[in-house]
Length: 201
Image (cartoon, rainbow, N blue to C red):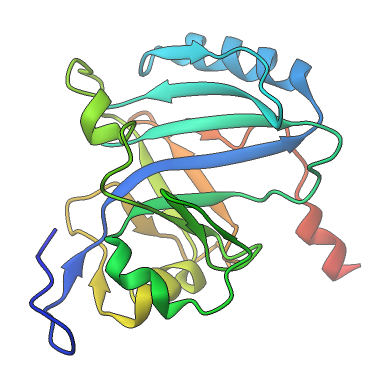
């Protein structure tokens, strides 16, 4: 990532993708189906984590980023697909009333399709992926999401030319995110209807 040159002046910086979140509402059995499917694809290392207070997590790791499939609890029905980008906290004040801001995470608005992570977060993929060897996943995003990402924090950003984020013209909404492997097989989302199609009927 190119560095910030001081308040009021900057060069274009490359977006750094940490992970992609694909949530499902209150559906732990779905995680078992996804886990079996991922193992059959023989991609990155896969790990399931114990049930937490807000969600249960299934993760596929790669060198560049990781994919997490979450199953939320009943009290958390409003999560949506999102890419999580590593952004210095000096950019965070651009968002005057974010619905979620903590020490390490900022969600600019619900359904934005992206969230910010502090470079100081101890579990960044760049800090935990030193032993990962697999790096075969590509993340397709909509032009709408790309437009939002390239203006994070009121600054100017770019999708890295050789990075995992690619624009797909068949995707339209900020939360339209699709992950494929090197064999063009869909990795995520899996086994889920698209609730956005309700808008067309």
